[in-house]
Length: 411
Image 1 (tube, one colour):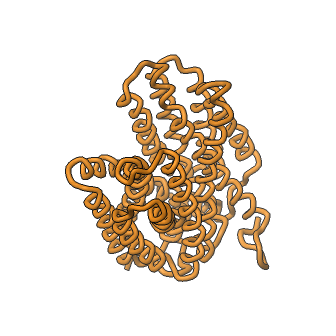
Image 2: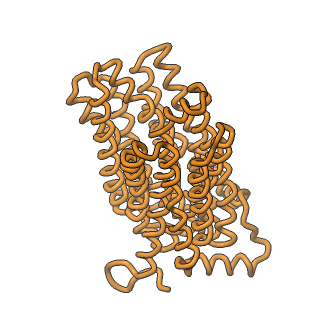
């Protein structure tokens, strides 16, 4: 199959690969987000406190880290397409089984496996997209894939509104098992890319080249890997810090109603989607270093200034602007990792880097809560702005050029 079409447009394989990557990430986001709409009902039914209920999300993140470590190397060894099918099957079956759970322990175990499948799948879909397209187009392609995650969250919200009133929270989790059909399709209908096959053949020929996590720290890659982990941590920290706390902050400090905070959430998500679309194009045109640099500086300024928003209109517009810059960058991580690491370890790099960022960055909610309890909103937002500045300094030290790919190393 040809990876690149002779003329404009996409080849048949590229269309299939893009659809598979976007579909996989969208379905994973949908399955993961179902919990947020029924957590309160589950706490009541199982007779647990909020801390025990909150641990469901914590153990999901731990599962994502475990899945990222496991399936990154497995995908690079045994195939990106096959591991897409396996990871989707894991989170879809585990999600459906939650509908049968009779105790909170069973929910913990099953949500851990939801995380294993979801965390393992991230690097797989980003690698499928990177395998199918040349470096100069990966920014916009991975932005489209990332946007599918937002669409998955919207599907989860719609499904919850339709299913929960009649079938309860168990019915919603049964619905979450539907992606198993996608897993069957991926197993039988999605071929491995020529690029992955060639990389695998080279590894098989050279028996000294073993695919492992250690590959991320060899041949001059250690510094690059650590810097990308830092960037991913800041990206996740900003997202969780903003999305977990700002709605309640707006309600309490800006005297905005619950309905008003929901409108803010919609506005912010719209800003995020637009930011992803623009960032993907921006990254391909001017290169990842300057695309990230400009968005990180803009994020630092936007987040800090947002702490001064007081009226409904500034809160609404400011939320969209913050979402545009702060989460728009999320669209580029699959591309920048795809450009900095060779095909043979691409899924490993994507999974390890982003899932470690997810595990560490998720603690930003705790830090924001501490600053709000002991200091002020300005301090909390200043903390996030400082993180973006740190990430800016990090990305400016990377040696990656516009359109470069297939294992660019640092100077």
